[in-house]
Image 1 (cartoon, rainbow, N blue to C red):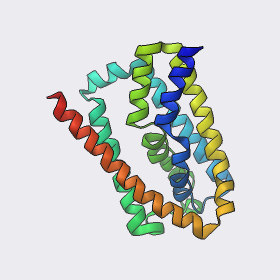
Image 2: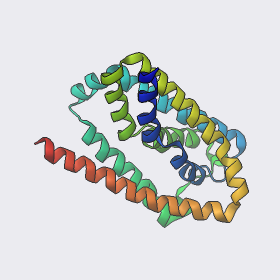
Image 3: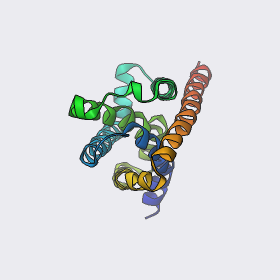
Length: 200
């Protein structure tokens, strides 16, 4: 049982499902319940598929593409930085109306940034690779499935939390979370650059 628990905990911390809630509420503002449910499903499925792919073929993919986890940190950090700056400066003007754009806009938000890199980012990918080396495929896969179920449940109930807070508070939380997201993205970029320098 210990390998399963020890594999679950680092991935749980790396994914940080509760930390995704404010950003999820910000990017899904104005969507209907069915659109949010569909977006949540797309985000979790995308994150799960990427994580499983990394679990079974991560080292091969990295070697074929000639990239490292540090490259992934910088790339993911840049995506999050653009998203956070866009939300802080432009607010609602950056977001197309899902009712006018159909499902495609929601699908793109579900894939990036929710699925990648917010749910499965560099930290989670690193945890998957380390866990596979330390505990094997089955404990890592089990902990991954358990974490994805938790993420789905947290995101599914987050609109309820948003309704309790109210529209004004939700918008304020969204802006503050965008500011913290910018700081997190800079930290990711910094960690990636430092890792690259140390690898030289």
